[in-house]
Length: 90
Image (cartoon, rainbow, N blue to C red):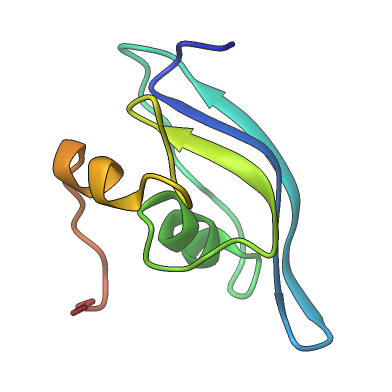
């Protein structure tokens, strides 16, 4: 198992027929600074929303702070801080 603070494996998100995110694989190790860069519509915000538990992945897995973003969403939220462009209220 990878102990990096952020790990995503084959992370996918569909909106109907549209593939917003198509198989992201990434590892962000302790102390690294990571940025998502790309044109509008590339899936950057969707990927961040999945990693912060605001959006459930269609498939694939992701762990943040050692917790599964789907099965342990509350634990992920207790261990992260995020400032998004748009407000997200649960």
